[in-house]
Length: 131
Image 1 (cartoon, helix red, strand yellow):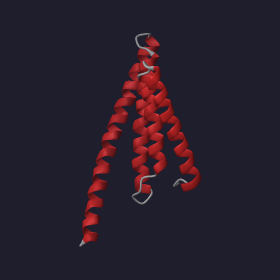
Image 2 (cartoon, helix red, strand yellow):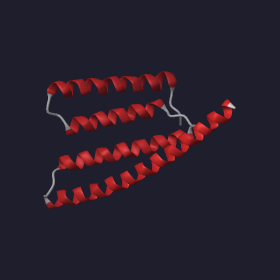
Image 3 (cartoon, one colour):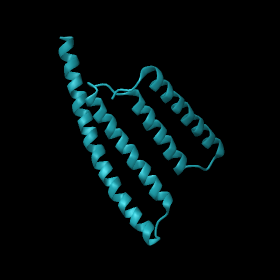
Image 4 (cartoon, helix red, strand yellow):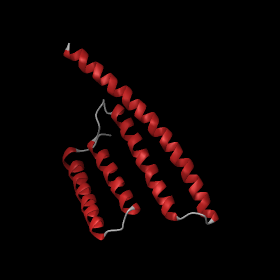
């Protein structure tokens, strides 16, 4: 009985992840289109590179989440830890680029990136990564 329940829950989780993956693909395409418009506006002189970089990093965040979902299905329904660390580092870098008003906040976010990179090194060294 418990095996059937766990299989049912796994199926529900997989269906939900496919839905999230589809939503992320739509958001990725939307961001790509927006990236094209911002690039064109930069060429014409109507936009700033600030918006371009913000949109580009958002694109990479969506891309990493989609790669994480693909990796989940390839790794026999397990999420690799190093992908979460990559996503965390990218998200904090995006935050630093977008909101860099306070030097104290920048220091805290930089320490957080350092901790995540150290964690990534430890995971790669002691746990390994799933390819």
